[in-house]
Image 1 (spheres, rainbow, N blue to C red):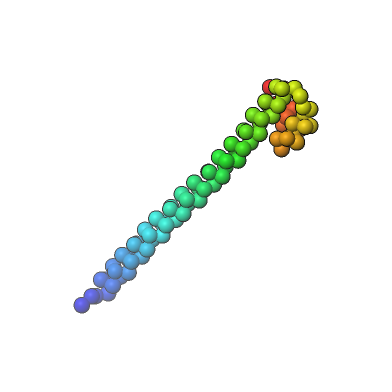
Image 2: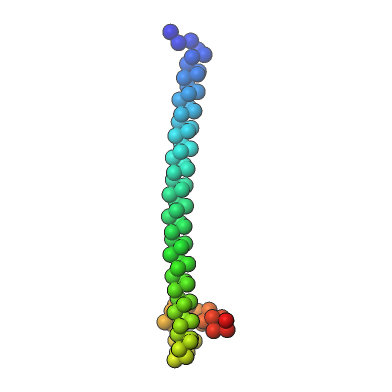
Length: 86
């Protein structure tokens, strides 16, 4: 027969196990979300760098205006001007 102390101990063990499971699940979900956001950010940065490289190449050719380069790369004219000054 289980006394009152035994019942409380069992309850506490169940709570402890549920807490551990909840923490594990939270960590797993947090890592998955962090990785997903990191990948998205990496793609955004890569896309931005590609646009800048393209703009620099077009600027070095000297055949297009800054406005045309901005249109071709989806960069702002200010961004193109900054790249030109580098």
